[in-house]
Amino acid sequence: MSRIDEAELVARLKAGDQAAYAQLVEENAARIYRLALRMMGNETDAEDVLQETFLSAFKAIDSFEERSSLSTWLYRIATNAALMRLRRNEPEQVSVDEPIERDDGDLLPRQFFDFCCLPEADLLRDEARAEMERAIEELPATLRSVFILRDIEGLSTEETANALDLSISAVKSRLMRARLKLRERLSAYFSHGPVIPETRE
Image 1 (cartoon, one colour):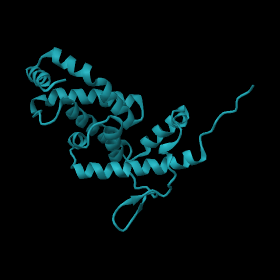
Image 2 (cartoon, one colour):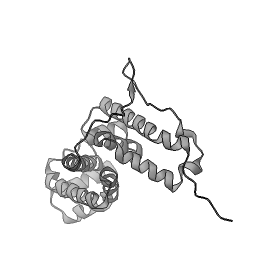
Image 3 (cartoon, rainbow, N blue to C red):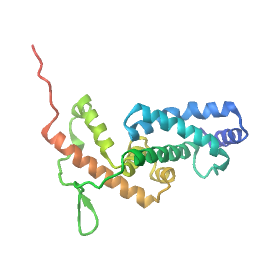
Image 4 (cartoon, helix red, strand yellow):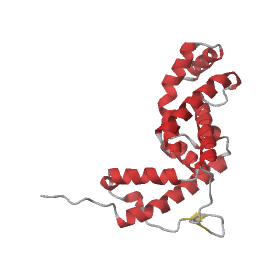
């Protein structure tokens, strides 16, 4: 959507145009649901976050200042809704498996198997995809939200910062930590190789 089209849509939303509300939902519901599902890990909570996101957006549309895109604004509302639910239901705990911190402040994973260059067939296995999904779900919520927006949804670092109300440096730091945690979490799986069922001839 061009800036002009989006500005027109925002104006219609602020004027209470019901068709504009329907358009906003139609154009953004799939991506917001996808984000919510990855954040929450189950369809029921994802649907609740989706509904809460659009209800909050409709109520707050008059305060939308258009400093970011509508989609980025919706991502922020959805992420906040998901984080609030996660904090209520599953208080975040500090893991004893944190990466090793070097003297210069860099974080290093405890395992170093490089799974980035495995044959595509291995990475595309259903089992491997499921393992990746589980690893993402196990990330702390604050790291998970950055990883999903930046690496899965494809937002830029600046857009991710706007969506999460973070500084660019905080986004980069959290993204690095998320990637390292995933790398460590998945290294054991890929170093031993996925379980390949036997085939009968």
